[in-house]
Length: 293
Image (cartoon, rainbow, N blue to C red; front, side):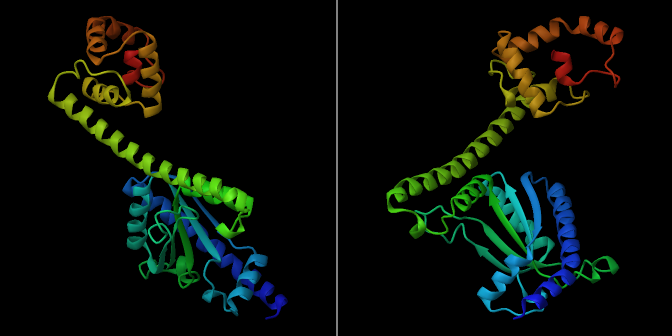
C-alpha cells in the first residue's frame, strides 16, 4: 500500500464524506425532533488521514474507500438508558443498517468499561435525486451512548488505558470501583427519570380531577400541573422558569398549592387592573408564571 496513493485518494474522497456527514446530522436532527427524543449531543467527524492509514494497515484493507467502515462517524449522546433503545429504533426506521454492535448488553454484568452501541449504515433508496447521488452508497458509522458512558470513555481515553491489563495492578481495584459507579449512576438516572415522569403524570391527573391540587406540596411537577389547569389560555413557562418560581415561593413561605391558590384568587381582581395598566412587552398578557409573581 503506497502512502501517497492513500493520501491522494483520501483528499479526493473527503468532500463526499463531508457532505455525507452534514446530511446525516441534518436527517437525525429532524428525526429526533419529530419523535420528541431529547439528546445531550449530536456530532460528526471525518477520520483524519493518519488514523485512516493506520486502520487500513491493521485491517490490511486497500482502497476503494467505500469499503472502509468509519471514515464518516456520527455520535449521539443521550441522557438515559431508555434513550439508547429509542434512538436505535429511529436509526432502523431511517437508514439501511448493515450491522449492529451492541457493546452494552454484550458486556458481562460485572463490567462497565467502554459501552455504546455501534451501527454501520447507508442512506436508503428513498433518499434520491442529485443531492444524494454522490453519497448514497457510502457507509457511515453511528455510535450511541449515554452521558455517563461518554464520560467514562473520555476519561479512560485520556488516561490511555485501553484494557484492564493496561492498568497498573495497584490501581485496578479503584478503577473497577469507579467503573461500577458510572454504571450505578446510569441505572439510577434512569430510575429517577422514570419516577419523575410518573410523578408529573400523577400531578397532571390530580389537577384535572380536582379544582386544585389541595394540600400537595409545591414542587416542579405539582406547580407545572397547577399552572396548566389554572391558566389554560396563558403562555406556559419553561421548566427552568417554573423551577425558579418554586424557589421563590418556598423562600416566601409557601408550602402547599392550596395556600397559593387561595392567595391568587384573593388578588385576582387587583391583578386584572394591574395587567391592564401595565401590560407586558411584548404580548397582550402575562404568562402563567408572570401572573403568580
